[in-house]
Image 1 (cartoon, rainbow, N blue to C red):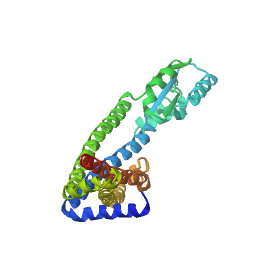
Image 2 (image 1 turned 30 degrees about the horizontal axis):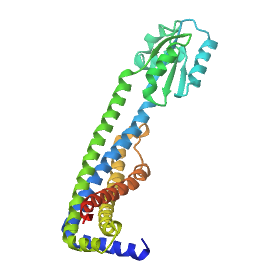
Image 3 (image 1 turned 180 degrees about the vertical axis):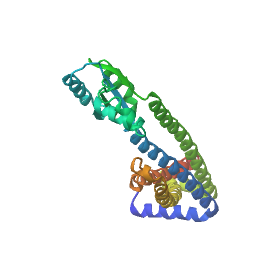
Image 4 (image 1 turned 60 degrees about the vertical axis):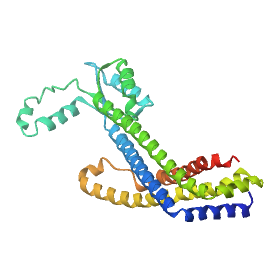
Amino acid sequence: MNGRTVGYCFKQGVVNIKRNKLFSIASICTIAACIFLIGIILSIIINVNSVEKQVEQNVGVTVFFDKGLKQEQIDAIGATIKADKHVEKYKYTSAEEAWKEFQGDYFAEDPELAKAFANDNPLADSASYTVFLKNIDEQDAFVNRISKVQGVRKVKHSEQAKETLSKFSKLLGYVSIALIVILLGVGIFLISNTVMIGITVRRHEIKIMKLIGSTNGFVRAPFIIEGVIIGLVGSAIPLVILRVIYERLIAFVMSKVGVMASSISFATVGEIFGVLVPLGLGIGAGIGLVGSFLSIRKHLKV
């Protein structure tokens, strides 16, 4: 198509929207509602994944050593841990440090009781490495590997925390996919009906155009443009609303969580809408394109 033809098709697409104002507005509102809900779902998913990663960094695996193990052997175990590609970071806690932490937790209100152990560290064999993995799903495999290293007596890990995080993430993913598919189906159905009305109004004109040799592409283009415009407008409106709501909601939540804000943070506006804007506009245009294409297809056979 040349520029003149494209201009004509675009103009006819806009005319179709004006002819069917009521149904066009209904389609825009429906798509806006769909994109709004999809935006909420994706915002939740992105934030859950962000929080999950932060929580994963605080779910550690503790490695204890055999009794009487020399420091060189402990260092060798540390080197093995460091070399593992799934390890994000690790920390060594000596027996003395473990005892001090224990006193702080349990003898803080009765320091005299702790003095009874002044010359006898009850945690003499409690030196350990605390290991944090890049992905909590690798925990079982890591525990299996490190347990076989010579000098390792016991490996303590939080199976419940790992399973809870993994199951919640998977469940959220499945539910989100199902909801998004339903919303996309509703959007396509509405646009198909809107475009179908325009096609019905112009069905005799379409037949004449086909009889005098107009190509399918030329006949189809105005209706495709109509659907895409409706889809883009319907997706742009909720994206603007979502941005305003998200900025204010995050500011409100962060002001209420207090000290927790330093340990757990939500995804920024840039992170959310860097994904949501192109995806939302793409989904809106895609719904319009597919809905229009399905509506016009059977009318091209004369």
